[in-house]
Amino acid sequence: MTHSNTAAFVRVEGILLARGVLSAAAYLAANAKKFGERALRLGLVAVAAPVHGLLGQTDRGLAHRLANLALRGMSEDRVAVLCEEYAEDVLKDKLLDQGTELLKRLQAEGHRVVLISDNIAPIMEPLARHLKHYDELHCNKIEFEDGEATGKLLEPILGSNIGGRWLDDYAAAHQLDLRRCYAFGAHGPDMLLLSRVGKPCAVNPDFVLRRSAKDADWPIIEYRD
Image 1: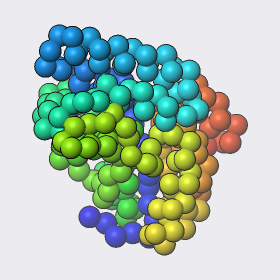
Image 2 (image 1 turned 180 degrees about the horizontal axis):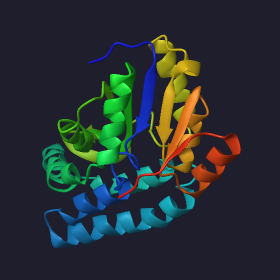
Image 3 (image 1 turned 180 degrees about the vertical axis):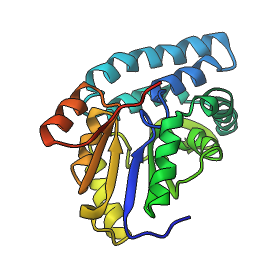
């Protein structure tokens, strides 16, 4: 583990994984215990999908909230089991080689490597066991009451439009000069992270981020098969 006074903030979705929150919510909903329950939960994911499409270029917070409503009423144990299955059986073998090489290079250069994910902790924490070359993982957390998921995400919601403020708070807590730090993003909302650091980079950017990166003259990395 590095102990650097510079950090590299890396968005998991789009850089390490091609799959995002909707894919995870659909997996959990489809594996509910009863048929009627599965149909209801998948319906909630279907409602979240167009919202994600509309707001995904600017603020994914609302879409994340809607998608995770599909977990409402699931027991904490059931959520843990399904999330670990999803991490092990689906995501583990979908980690992008170019993304893992990026982490290796950043850590070799002496930076504190901070992963930021829109997915929830019961998914990302098991998946992180298969990752090397990072120092910290920050992801969304779902609320549980009396052993059941409420479907609500706890603040701060990563992937929403508070990303820049989250980064400022992190830098203050760790005495980082953001002008010397790196950030790597793939989607429109990541502009809030990239614009805060001195060394931003867009990776496989979507349309909004690509246009902004070109306007700002930020480096762009394209993965190749």
